[in-house]
Image (cartoon, rainbow, N blue to C red):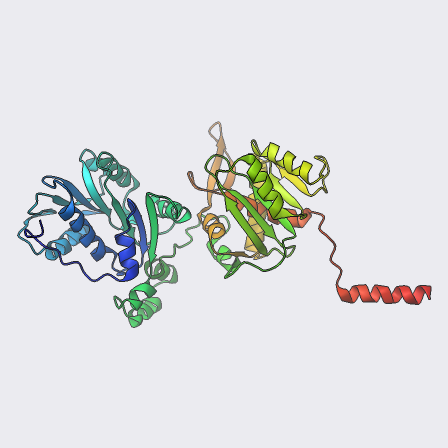
Length: 427
């Protein structure tokens, strides 16, 4: 096969190579403009077509938002192929018989029907969600790999949400998340620092951050406010001793999350785990919380866990000042909890480290609540299919530090003053 044709793969810098030639089936790549995602994926799709077994007549797709963008990729791919391939508008037939198609995702219904052996979805944040559904159906029989690439464009699109899912689950065996920003391209010599500085000066800040830093603009969909969340993030976990804990218990594939906090609102302890027996979960929580006041999700299957924790900590169920308390989630109580957390974050009265807590907070959104077709209000929630366990545990810890009976802290200066007064009074 190598005697028939050859491909000139462009030099790829490490982050570019790792993202595009990711061994997992789906690679979701959020990248700054001109960071090399398109050129790298052109080489990837050609190599997929070149190396597949029994290639004759097998289809490989490049799908862009509109025809003109598909044409740009086709022209670049045509120049990359140095063999005697058959070139026709939006199609390259390699000497081995494999066919690379360059298509528009503007009419998703036109994408159904074919068997596709590998695909690239270009500028995915601008591709219609229906096109993604159609492309996914074309690789069902072949189990072909897909590269999903693009700039960040707000938060309310399927690519952003899918990327968050991949980012939250780094151990998922089938999908991976990668991010390439302007600094990576500058370091690799793909872009110059002067060009980045010029873009920063000449573009609106939110546009610059999306195009060059791969940071989504706050399009009004986040109840906490992205800027407020960012203001509460600290580089490292606070080194204080937890004085109160919030615990959210897993349902099905969710996470058990335990967050410890100081009375001042500093997150100083974070643990989460999945898929463990309730007995193990109980023991692990007991080991983490020690003697600190703790508020635990007691909804549904969480109720027996709360009872077990209360028995082990000698807490009476009706004792409002006992160490372990339950919090039952209803539509109303959950919304109150979220509104309380929003007030804390918006006043910057809390800190937490980067990682899963921040990712979950950033994906939260407003949803219109209704009953019997009537609007009943607004609720704060994670999008369907995404986790909210860290946010729930954070909110439980936050509300509990404001109301729990914590050990009274008396400054040394006050203690000395009181002791001095006693000696004078009693001689």
